[in-house]
Image 1 (cartoon, rainbow, N blue to C red):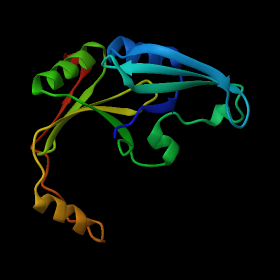
Image 2: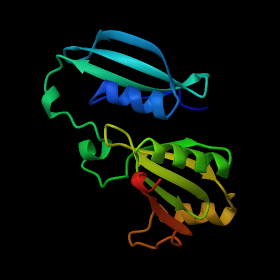
Image 3: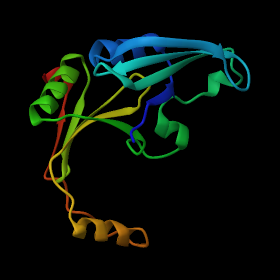
Image 4: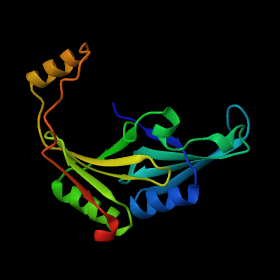
Length: 176
């Protein structure tokens, strides 16, 4: 089973469109316009990913909703959690694709953080809502020891850190 779509509110729908279609290459294929729970109405825009009609990212442009001026569009700001805690990640199949996305983000004016987590390799940037977006390549496999470590961590009350990342680098847009 996989997810069908992730839906988020948009602070600025035109900026979201420029990022997700113009930079990310996702295609806007559908909008649903209707009343929203609690009052007001919204436009729910669906972006197809990789030409797959079963996987989307979607954004709400909200109108006349109570409390709209107080909305937080960055997931971490809204939840009061540290930056980067809440984020969404898209997969790539090769290291070359990861490099291509990093270069594309930099060329579009976005700073990129790259981390080799020892079992996956990731790049991160922020979308116009301030949310962290990731592309990730799985580079390792999972052992019974990995599972046992994860299960033990469920009950641990003290930090027992994982090995540090093999590499971490910031790629600034102006350096691209």
